[in-house]
Length: 310
Image 1 (spheres, helix red, strand yellow):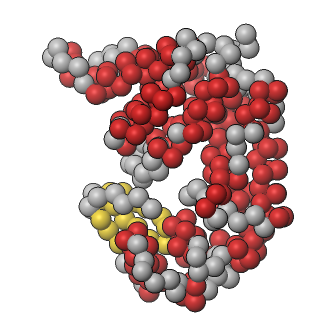
Image 2: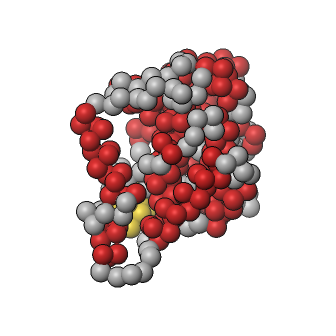
C-alpha cells in the first residue's frame, strides 16, 4: 500500500472539516441545513448515495463503467458537478489496485462534464480533473506508463489542468512516482514541432490551444498561423471567447489581449467565408464582430440570460 500523503496542517484541517460537512450531511453545510427540519431527502444526499454505490462497484471489481456513463448521460450539469465534488471527497474509500482502471474510465467520461462559467465555484470538468490528479498519486510509474497509452493530443487541455492540480498537491508535500510535467512538455513539444493539427476532429477538445500557449506562447502563435484555415477558424474563435457571469446573466466577448496572445497574425475576416453556418457558429461570429467593432471593453459584451455552451 502506498504511503498516505501528508498535506500541510491548515489544508488538512479545512479539507477534513469541509469533507465531514458534505459526507456526513452536517448542518454547518448550507446544502443540508433544511434536512434538519424535514425528513425528506434532497438531491445532495441522493447523489452522495449514488457516489457510494459506484465506489462499491469499483471495489468489488464489478462492471461499473456502464452505470457511471449512464449517470453522466442523464444528470443535469449541476448534478454532475455535485457528483464530482462528492466523488473527490470519497477517493480514500477506493481500494488499492483499483486506481488505474478508474483513471482510464474517468478519461472516457470527460465529454459528459461541462465547462461552465460559475461564480467562484469550479465547474464539473475542473472537478473531474482534480480527481484525476489525486488518483494519479496512488499509481506506480509502471501504471502511469500504461495510463499514458489511453491519452492522445485530444487530451492536451486535460493534461495541462491536471498538471496544475498536481503542482498544487506537490507544494503541499504530496508525492508521485513519475514526472507528470515532463509528460506534459513532451506532448506539447510534439504538437508544435510536428505541426500536428489540434483542430482536426480526432485531436480536438476545447481549450487545447491554451495548453500549448502555457507551454510556449511564441511557438504557439507561429504554429497557429500554419494550421488555421476556413474550416477550423470558428473553433479557434470559440477558444478566444471569454465568458462571464453576473447579475445581468452571462456575457460573451473576445478581448484584445486574447487575440494578441494567440492570434495576432490571423486574418479572421479573410478566413470566415463559410456558408450555411450552424446556430453556434452564427453566435460565435456575432461575438467576434461586436468584439472587434467596439473599443470599450464593456460594449464588446453580448449578454444572454441563459448559458450558451461553446
